Image (cartoon, rainbow, N blue to C red; front, top):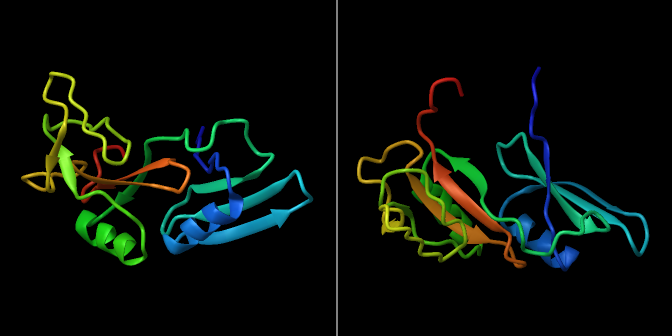
Length: 157
């Protein structure tokens, strides 16, 4: 059985502000359906992605900005960061995990350290290892995105 992640509901406080942000970030607008004062759905797809996001009015009871760790996989982290910055998006500097494993501090600007080598170290991964370099940004409500550089997929992917 195939199970494909297709859509993520983002909690936002101001629909038009979020729409402008994701348009500026270069996401493709797929739908903006307004069915009255209490319900609206805005659907976007990141470039090259098969999974989309949707936000609006009447779609979720989650608090605006409560989604963290939304990963966007890129082939070249520095190029992707530069393109987003060029589009007016505030993106962290590129970093890698000090312990060399999966980074778990998703919030933009977060400095995470748990005593086991986990923490942000400046710059891309020293060997430019696939899955090893990151940058973060947030939408206007604080929903947190992570760019992760993947140049060679792990086996089975």
